[in-house]
Image (tube, rainbow over the protein chains, first blue to last red):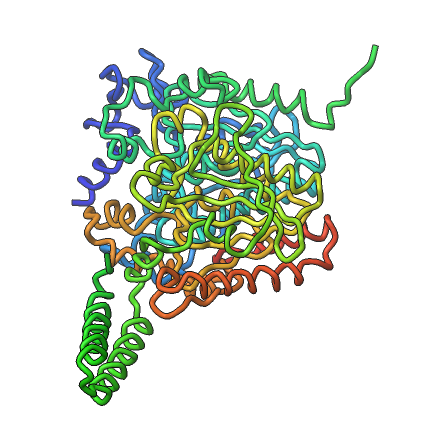
Length: 284
Length: 315
């Protein structure tokens, strides 16, 4: 039972499928990939370059300079509304916490990126689809405020189905709260880079994720406001090929670059070094 | 067309009217009978309207005849000059706005606009804005800042439009920008939730120093129907979702999401719009007076603090 659930979960996350454990199959090209190879290749298929979903901890390791990361997150969610649908919210939270191995859908900390002092915040899809409730909103707000105080850049990796329904209007308010926090950063001329990954939709796209100085997207990521299912139901038409994918957003002017994950750290570091006030411009 | 829970009331009202007509035309004295029926009507109204479920309130918030943004502007403001267009793409009829006067004060006003009939509703896209609607709102925010006029926003939308064109033109981006633009206002900003406060599409013009709400309006992260479709896998469970979402004015006041409830006449604003308008006018004037002593930076910091404090978590 537990094993079956584990596999079902992994499949749902697009991380891996099929036994045996040491091998996995690319969901795009069906190539058999040795798992260790996939990990060293940053969860990008070595055959077709399809970007599989990457665990939040691996993202931290990929972006922060080695040994520099010092975690600042760890707030725990509550059940402010006493929300019950097919099961009580606290029950769901327990399960998500067990599955993701963290209290809520975000991990973040102080670090350097390409030597630039930064605050790095990474959302975690393994926890409730990366949904934003009070904890995610508060952690992002605190991280941004702390960066502003300490003169750090901010890098946020977004992955989210949107605002968390079980905290209803309180989740909605996190959109305003996180957006307001960015003002503190702007006031100090500190750079903020947003990285949109598969999927980023709803209230996360429509708040802090869309308001960065530089917005990068991973190839093929689903990015938008409304989810494709909702749009399909509303307009009762099939959606065009590639709709709401990173390349579509680049074409429509919504993101700065679509960047292969294997080049991501380099691009982020380059941007931070060009914009951060610690890098003084030499004249002449 | 009465709402389901209004039917017994409407039936009784019709019966009373009929008897009154009969008494007048026939000369028969029915005053005792009428007295009994009127008392029963008062009791029935009190029972129905003091025990509204959250789902029933959602229906009141959507009731035909409920005052819309333009109704409110027309009723409590004067000298309204409507301003159109986003100067980039087009004019979105789902969002209206302009310059107006409220008790001698010149203000900038914006709001979601529902239609009063099907034809108008189609033209206004059922008050579901495209990006150009939010860009129009942001233009008006610029205007309010430049001329130092208070900014008043009326919220009444099922949500921002979920469609291909809206996504192509960056729906998420403009909602985020509108939230940010409104947050940065250096003038008093007041948001009033008139009817439906559907998610980010509502919040985009909801970042006020004070957020007021009509007694039967709702405000949440998702509509009860969509929430039910996702969590119960059945949109028909909307009543359950409405309960779970705690989306009514009293719920939101206790969570600190709204600052003040504007009372509605018995049975909802659509049964006596004039009384509802008087309440909105009074609440706006009092709130403007409350904010009048704050300078531009204080207004910004006041808004920062207001939203900074929202959210519940454990250390």
